[in-house]
Length: 128
Image 1 (cartoon, rainbow, N blue to C red):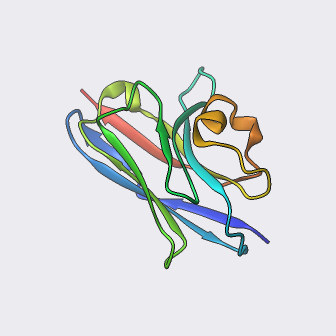
Image 2: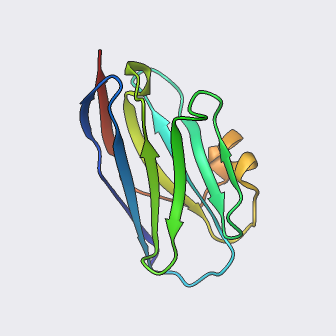
């Protein structure tokens, strides 16, 4: 059974940094696409960053230059380094994975529904 467990959320002031982690288990697929998505109260879920098994990445325009997605294959863990945080980054952040379809990172960011598995989310709150 595939499981994605996020951690690392918290409350920070604007300009601060956080690193989110997503520990994945229950699969051995060599080809995949994983990503971070977020949803703020009253807003639609949006793609933040995604990475595939080849290491190709894609970012939402709103986070380019501030956020970095990476993965540690040995630990089966996905990361999101978030720097220069802004109040508008406040949201519940979710880790998600596509293990079967081979979608490109930019595709899953645009259509989160393409992801097969989702974590429970971790809250990020940025105060001004």
